[in-house]
Length: 234
Figure (cartoon, one colour):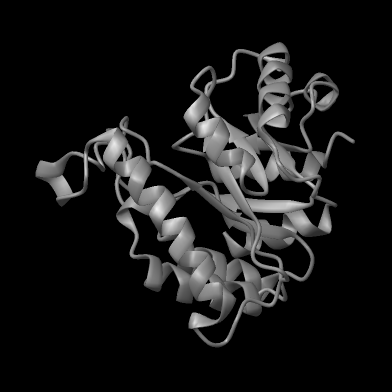
């Protein structure tokens, strides 16, 4: 992964992001820890933005996550973005019988909101050292439309990572909804992910500020290398 990140940086890519899972649906069995992976990436690179897309705070202890994020932010020279969400029901990670995690979506939403507030408190001085970035590490929030609660949550932070979009038109509608909910004129990111080789132009026109190349749950190294070597499409 670190070698792929170095390759991406040398080809002009702006970011390198990883999933955060402890398990996945069959047939996937090989899963890496995102924080150790990102630490290796941070140590091997100098420029690219890095982060988990997304980490499910409901199964994370906020105090431990605070230490992990600050350490990684400082290790990377202030290049960390924290992507957060409720966690996917598709992988079985939130089956209470499997790992004992909270399975109810509403309860997980409360854990997510509470966890984010605790993180900010730790970043703001409860823990030392603080993050390198000021005023804090940027937070991108996974959200889906038409549900307004996830959109309201995303609007309070630094970016929205829409899931299950039908296309650029749906992104344009979602972006407009988020803009209505925003109470700040601070910079705000809109992140989309599509298969490698997708033309980003329609997505940028619809409001995307980051267009990611995704590779699904079982990427082949050669496939990823070819996409990296093709370079960004901008």
